[in-house]
Image 1 (cartoon, rainbow, N blue to C red):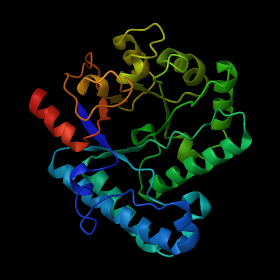
Image 2 (image 1 turned 180 degrees about the vertical axis):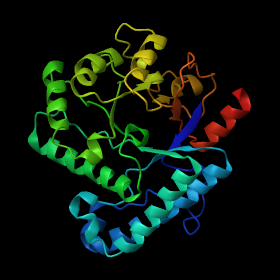
Image 3 (image 1 turned 30 degrees about the vertical axis):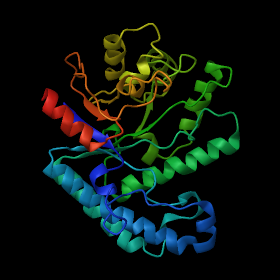
Length: 304
């Protein structure tokens, strides 16, 4: 069982601004309009350079699973990555990080933002989604990461638009508009609302049509079971991965952790306290806890 954390190393990001190590430096649109591509390039280079430092810390801490931020390139939809003034140095930094990951057996993945909606009936939304997903695929290619779900790009269907059959049909149709850099890595995840998509629905309506793997989210399953037990839904999701080791997401309720019923039950806790039930499945577990790597270190003390 391989435990990973998402996007931010809490210890590094809580340092003073001068000493901070992070891969999600960005800016508001007004700043981008004022400073333009030169400043975007400067931030991107810092983000890409710091990735190796995070991976090195992960290696020293025996954590070899990391979800990469979606903010390596600020306002990337507004320019071509190869127009960045620092692109040569950016490429070198990404190659170094990619080589380190491959040499030491680190699994790197990404979860593009929630506004990515391949199922949308609006062409503009679909085009924006394709643009964003292609940037992620380009990033992974620059790092030399495999074009397989081992280095997955994970999204949700996003919405039902009043007709799940229509929405999932749109998702599958628009999937074929993506490049191989994205299609070969794309996965889809079950949702945390009863009105959206369970593992069973994703299996019938997405996986059977286009063959992409399903990422099982333990916490989401509580709110959208599809009539399956946790063990059944996990097993069904795992069956979609073929020869690639499956990824699952695990988190716990912040409302329970804080003993505050006013908090949305779907909200994630800072730490995880319960033993993760794998039901003898061989899986990599992305821990979606607010305390990031600190939650993994505490979990290992409790249960490993």
